[in-house]
Image 1 (cartoon, rainbow, N blue to C red):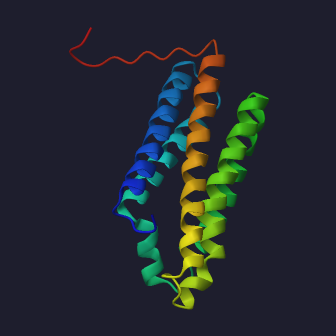
Image 2 (cartoon, rainbow, N blue to C red):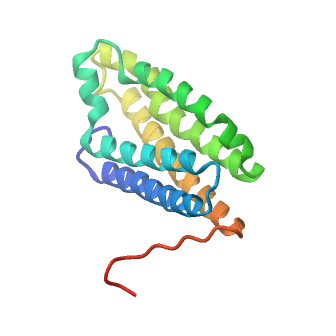
Length: 175
């Protein structure tokens, strides 16, 4: 699971892409309603698509190759800025949706950033092929996968509860 060219990576990338597509679809509906939070939905959806591309291409691992510090160290300030940008958006969501969004984010980031930083000493001490490190890998990847799946659940739950949400998409040539 720790390598990038495998089925769990494909699964994670596909799940992130699905979360992005669902969120962008919701953003289209919000755009049509002229909802004040439409840009936040679009930002969130675009972020998931970027995470999907990163998961498949391993862009964050490339950052590790050119810096001494882990990519996760650089991700923390970005996450904090994003949290500040989305704070009012989250506050204005229905309580249930906001709580599940936050919980899914904490689980995902806990795996992606938290476990990554916790296991950094294994890399520096050349202990990546140890039982201890290899037991942390499924925890990290599992938290990331579960966080995204929980976010998808929250989106679907929100979409079913938002009675005013109607999204019309026209595909050229189809009626």
